[in-house]
Picture: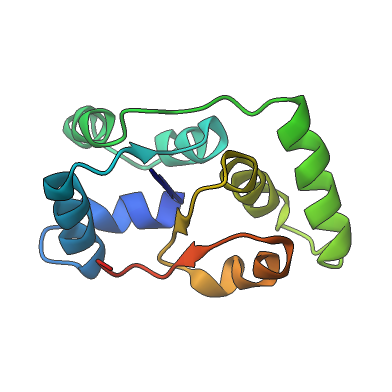
Length: 128
């Protein structure tokens, strides 16, 4: 299983991008693709049109809820990473992937590299 960050999914819906190629490869391999409900909500905030939402719903078949354990982990990540303004959503997205013990694919690896010390595996938008 691979969790997707919002940035990855947005770029993955653009034909020919590195993220599109990665999604296609993972789907051909039969990898399960998931996205936290936090990242899903961020995606739905758009702007995004209904056909892209329908396609994303088919690609991202699992959208695990953000729960109490994720909340505690996100708070820990936020505090450990310096309490940076505007970074709490990234902490929430990282927490869900960490607690699921799965890699997080992102088009913005710099936003998540600081969580690698806590065990997050970051996939930087490639098809490996």
